[in-house]
Image (cartoon, rainbow, N blue to C red; front, side, top):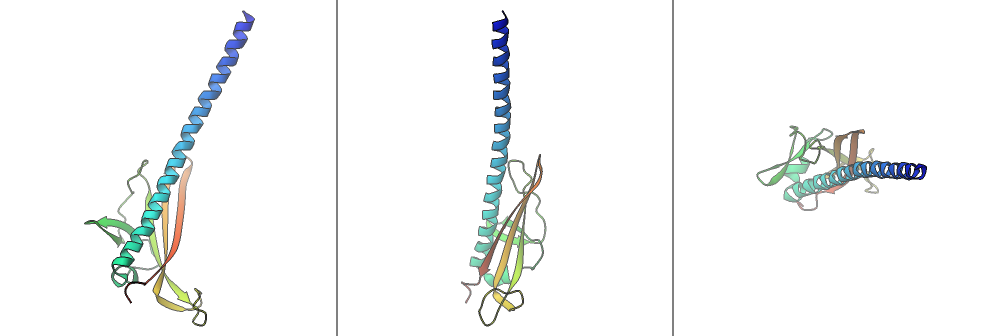
Length: 154
């Protein structure tokens, strides 16, 4: 009888461990899914701004407000940068928020390298896309930065 109780106890502990692993595995999958979705939204943000550049540097990028949060929104099947916050993006937790910041770029006139102390380069902008979302562990942030140049309007 004692042997049966010991075996049942050991099996109970084993099943409890398996149950805990299953719960933790499910939580890790949820975190991984959020991160994957966040990366996709970041990539979409960069690609959307590139599409605007390709459509018209002058109309969309050079004229965009600099050093302020803008929002990439789809309107009539086209991207646009808006100063109005459209609210959260659609997502599994439905709370992803994406901002785009367009910054002027300065270059050293002698070397043509990017240099904050240089002169303004009207054909280059630094684009920073930030994605925020809330999870059980708090607020998460992913940031992607790239430089765009006016290669098509010349």
